[in-house]
Length: 334
Image 1 (spheres, helix red, strand yellow):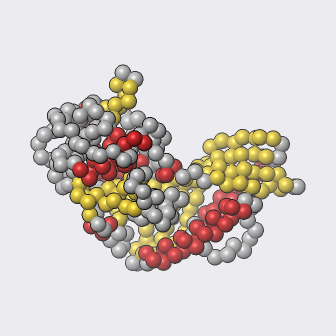
Image 2 (cartoon, one colour):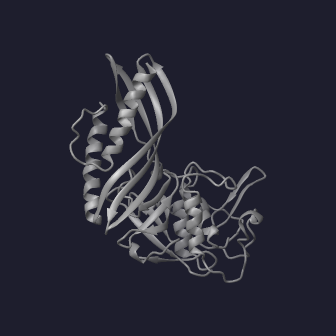
Image 3 (cartoon, one colour):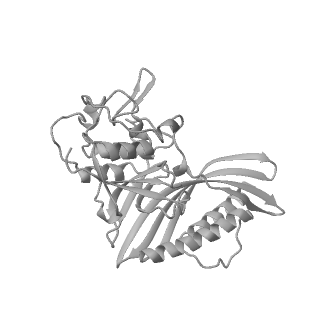
């Protein structure tokens, strides 16, 4: 019995893999009977085809590895499974071959029908739309930078001092190296957030030499101390996308940035923050780690781990027609 549903699972992953780069009508029967999913999948394939065409790019192939996270048998003949999907996507642009990677998760319901199995439901989590708990109050507040002395990062002996008052260069290459080192895992020296995109970006900025602005108040500055006396000790701007964009928009000392109006103006180590609904509450953060053959930024991110992903995220399940971007060019010196 297990071998039977595992074969269907393998076929499902193969079809999912093909759909990522092949937008023609499928010639073989789908193993999925979830009509909502089939409609969404067809729409997604059409959007991807148009997206690549508009970029002047052409998808070449996709390599998908699936790992079974858990399985739950609800009753005889019905099974729920959670999958982790690691995808490598190759595409051509301007005569160059590009590769991006991302890690997604899905939850499937499998049903036994007669002698075989089908995928009766596909649930696609969209963690990039999530926000950390208990920080909604900062989404619409006015930002006021609290002036005060900056103190060293608690574990400065591990990653280097972050509180120097001397002018220092932003080491963009170091920020990118850190981003590529940890794009699909977590640095154990830092707290692991369920919604981790902004904490990851903050770590990259710090690795590039961005100075900690320690105020001791979570609603101001940009700082991290981990857990102190079993209490969380980091600023909202360290771990929450909307708070980071407020900080970068208004900061006049320590970590600073300039808002630019086009992605082409960004450099390695710069930051893009995303408002999926266009309502002023930013939900996702990425860092520029490469450029495609046309000079457009490619980014790394967490929450949905991604490496060298095209900057506009139109392949994301979180993206909507209302998406607003904020492009931050990080200061060359602090």
